[in-house]
Length: 95
Image (cartoon, rainbow, N blue to C red):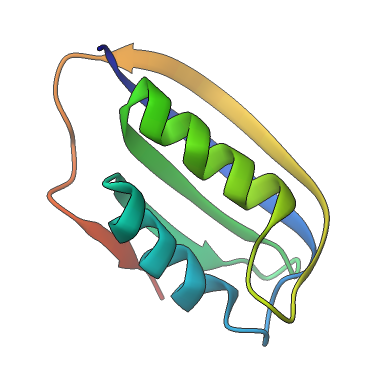
């Protein structure tokens, strides 16, 4: 299965509700790598890389599930592309 990379930005009530921590936990469970961080605009953004089916599972989580206290209005995905190898060794929270 090909490896893919995708950037994401999650809009809604996603800061101050453990969204980054839950994203990191979910990514590790899903077996994908990348990163997540808060933005100054009140959104959460990051990148996910891994096998296509696992990245798609993570995209679904970022669009519909999120952390228990979050309220996701929408999630934008961009720069989706096939990659030859992973650029990260794990999934981390950036500050």
